[in-house]
Image (tube, rainbow, N blue to C red):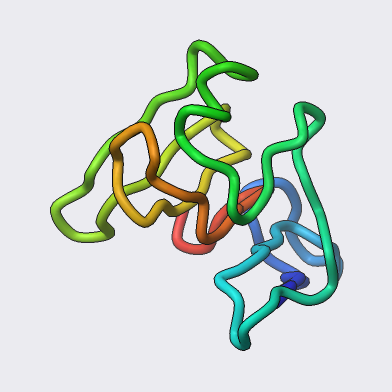
Amino acid sequence: DLLLLFGDESQTQTGRRHFFAWQYGPPYDKEISPKGPATDGGITVGSTVRDMKKVYPDVSVFNDEIFGPGFEIEVTLTGALTDDGPSGAVISLYGGVACGE
């Protein structure tokens, strides 16, 4: 349920193998494993849009016509949601420099 991305080419560095991004979720089984990670504000897989807005009032919640419901806390901290309503739940978190950027 945790994906770590390493490579020798990214927006941050070139020519040297380095860690550049991570993805946590969606769960592949009934429970996510390992437990965590979470943002500094405690947002993780299963947190709701309502929870997120309490901790991060400036969070951008959207529904992309290609990728579906998601959010952006900051450029290097984003994620996917079940839906963009207040009870929509986080199904994955993405950090770092995403692929294709």
